[in-house]
Amino acid sequence: GNSVTQMEGPVTLSEEAFLTINCTYTATGYPSLFWYVQYPGEGLQLLLKATKADDKGSNKGFEATYRKETTSFHLEKGSVQVSDSAVYFCALSDRGNTDKLIFGTGTRLQVFP
Amino acid sequence: DVKVTQSSRYLVKRTGEKVFLECVQDMDHENMFWYRQDPGLGLRLIYFSYDVKMKEKGDIPEGYSVSREKKERFSLILESASTNQTSMYLCASSRDSRMNTEAFFGQGTRLTVV
Image 1: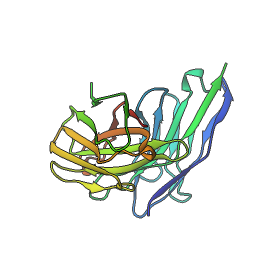
Image 2: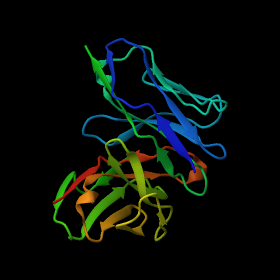
Image 3: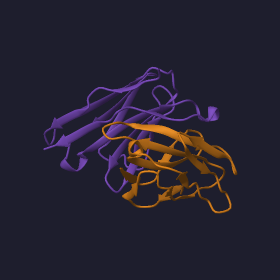
Image 4: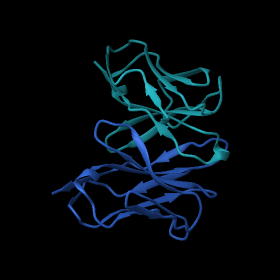
């Protein structure tokens, strides 16, 4: 079945460091791919998405490119801030009869001044 | 502003109680979902619904049921709460899959079963 694998955390960085959080997926067909972010005490919110191969999603300085050949959707940011500290979830939508979202286990990012 | 509202942020219930978690969305979305979130396990789908009175089991439906009598409301029911159902529960909604849009989440209900 469809699945998402993302790197375990926590990821600990200093402010202005470069961030990469790895995400790979297994899916039949052509899923849409998402990154969601969960700030402390809140629900999940969409960070960015890509709906087809080679698409690049971007938002708030974060980017991820849909790589069909490597089945990956790695999240990157050139310079992280303390306010980016959160849990990041990679997800796919199987776009069958319903938009069932399948999530990875989440990666906690901690950014220190 | 779009909104998914869960009726409680925190709940404490006793083993064996029947528990209702309520979720309401104001976006006229067709799809609604219930997930539970546990450390190290990410989000796991319990049930989802793609239309009124329609429901489908997710990955971990055992011990749960759902109800969707109106389009905007999706209820999760724990028939007889057990301590292993202590968790964070997240409700989400989205448009029909052909619209290929994002899911919107509520703030979560942290349920403790004692």
